[in-house]
Image 1 (tube, rainbow, N blue to C red):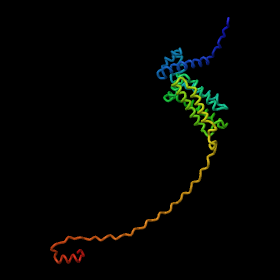
Image 2: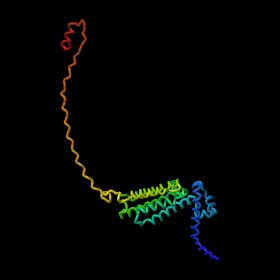
Image 3: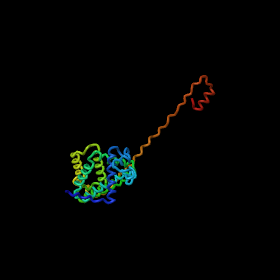
Image 4: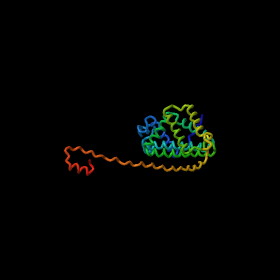
Length: 268
């Protein structure tokens, strides 16, 4: 007769943690079916098999459940960074992170749920604050990994580590969104993604004059030639204006006295 091993009894804290996990899993299942705003708390209670009072003991609202999901994503991302933080082969570590994302969101529903959480962060301040904190931690941690790899001569030293970390994060986010519309990312796409990263980050791809080189001093400005003064145009001689001839009408029957007066005035 086989002897059944009794399960180790859980502590109150362990039981509470398990209840919390069960509620989040049931809520995620409901959210995948109908979305955040179409799912009611009663539907979540029915799915998890608990009364409203028990569920509200752990989460005061549906928004609190969504925020907890975002917090779980943050925690898992931080664990992933910690795992690869001290890597001696950064390109290989980044390839592993890419495949970890692809495997984690392999199901359309999982990728879609993550996309909804990010979209909810734009409307919900509580969820948005969690996502912003998670992204800051992720980008800063990734930038630190890139800087360490630059110091070791593993990757292109001319890259801005912080900006490169932001770009890598955006690329991974794009993979998750793409996976939300397809069953899975093709292996060829992942291999191409790896090849792009290696070429972009490769230390050999940096021009020699960009590898930690100090900027050359600015050249002194060339002296500006002073233009020669323009010659003044010669003044044209002023021509005397022609005298105006006054043409007077011929007056018939002019008397001798009038004619004499006009001649004295030089008018005729």
